[in-house]
Amino acid sequence: MRSLIKLVSLSDAGGVGKTTIAVNLAYEWSLRGYSVVLIDLDSNHSLDSFVDLEPELDPKLTSARLFESDFDGNYPDKNVFGSKLISVIQGTQELKGMTERLVSRKLREYVLAKTLQKYPLDADLIIFDCRSGFDLLSENALSASTHVLIPLDMGVKALTAANLIQYIWSQCLELDLDPAPEIFGLIPNHFNHKSADELELLSAIKDVAQQLEIPLYPPLRQWQRLKNASLRGQPLKQIRASDPINLNFSQLVDDLEKISLNNYGEKQNSKPR
View (cartoon, rainbow, N blue to C red):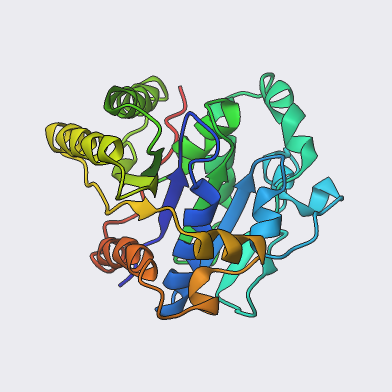
């Protein structure tokens, strides 16, 4: 039996590869015969270009609809990459003002979790693609998630990575999540294997991961073909199935598949007080 996984990709900085990883991970997941929904919680439409969709101008047909009090379970998802197993709920500029509108809502950090509980998506995996930094939308994604993936740009310091992990754990405590989402792993990005500084940094990140008992995935190296695939609005494997960098995404999906098939079960999200 498979269990639903809800994965959020979090980072305190932009340009770390959250969307690139999400798209290529989703495609690899679909190749195993599983369904996935990508929910864009960013206002910059970056996911649209990565999956070759025109920006959606009607907020009612975007992820903003999921936060409305009168949402009726009619998800505005669209299939992408010619597959019925991969769908996207697009982001919108309206998300910029969503934080202000949510402030007056009761249990405002749990709106998305409550929506997904009341109206379960028919999918094996949900991926939340959040904007960089932490705000009320990322808190909603965290409270709705079962697992957290943390991409790291190789320009960061190892201490920054440790602080980021500690911050996410503190957020889970503040939100009183029980059980809290598991840290699925760290994945360094934009890695230059010829740089002595980056090799030293990678070693330091390995130490942090071991100390905190968090999986560390092989780094995604700087690779123009991966960037070009994103610019074309396609996953790399759809263009170059034999490219070795696809193995990075296969490893991520291998572990997600183990979690799903082991039937860990979906966490109970918010705890109303």
